[in-house]
Length: 498
Ligand code: ADP
Ligand code: MG
Image 1 (cartoon, protein in one colour):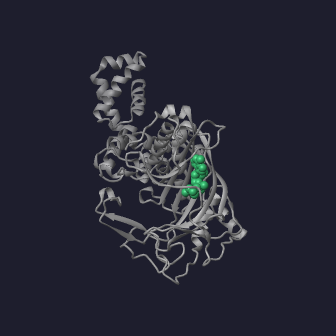
Image 2: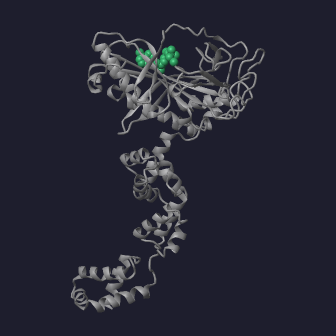
Image 3: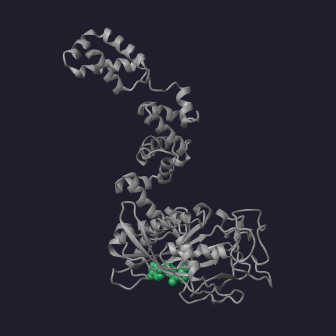
């Protein structure tokens, strides 16, 4: 059964989209949130578990202090208040990947609340996403359905459960309803999750690898009649873990819900599942009623981070991505749009590392956004996948700066490095690519060219300086392009005048 859709542009003309994001991040602590089992991706199924991970009777949880510290880091980075005291709660539900039959989470006492994150869109527009809370919880295990199509439970003959992930620390960041984004709602959502991912990495709290599901978003979407109308009924699409997926889900839901509303129907409040083709499919119907029977976790004491500790954590926060971008833009003397191109090309870290390896930001940018961007495009790969390191790029630029390579020769050396021929120095000497700086060699070539073209020599003597171009050309041919044209021109004038 395929959904009726309204054209996206028409849908956002007629309705005002409202979105809400619940972003989960798996923390990179050494051990799990409430027990000493190792916290690592993968592993032999059910090898990274303790009795607590699977909630065996009598097993007691203990809070991971590092997990709390990471949650506070995230809260502070998002401008949140940090609770003086907060409790864990049991969120009760049954699912085979949750052996305990409850998830240890936080309900009305999150560790962090009332924050905001300003995100930058592709064209530089800024949008502030209001954040309601960030709370601590644990991940569930993983079910694998065998025998059905695309790993779905439908048609499966049996299912396997791996509890290695059960109890892995999570922080869930819940936005307030995001209003006012209009047609750009999909873009705002993707930019927001991307900013969060960059912040998690900068904070060192998670590798934040989307493809491993380290960061996953539940995407809520509703439509209303206009900016003054009450909020409409929302759907929640679960566990979207690509930026493109987030964008696609929101577009699809806007088009789908608009078609329902325009035909006089009502949007069902339900959980949906994003599909590989960018559509969503209905899951269970969900009501706002609290069907999880939350209650305070009796086996854990409240978490009461002292103000001293919170201030220590705040003081030790690293520079965050937005501030870093502003600083580097100024240091490298780039315009806003040049900096945006750098960020959009995924070249920021590479340029920074190249500059740190000993060249200017401008020179580093010229290579990564120019010759190397072209090389990546040609090979249909990402910049960081190219077979060249920032240190090699800096070394190459050093050879240009010291006059040993012209830009043109440097590009040939670069090709050699990309082809795996070694470091720039080595490639330059192996390929014999160095500026001919031996002036006697150059003057000999100049004299030969002047003798071969006496008419040109006369013209230059007669004051037609432009005529020297023909001699420069001849010298460049004689040196296989390895002379510095500017120096050759100077030498020609010296020969003629002297
Ligand atoms: P639940 O935990 O049941 O999913 P929440 O109240 O925590 O519900 O809300 C989940 C997310 O949905 C939050 O990010 C919230 O801001 C957002 N949200 C709430 N109402 C709407 C709405 N009408 N349209 C879009 N998003 C909404
Ligand atoms: Mg939810």
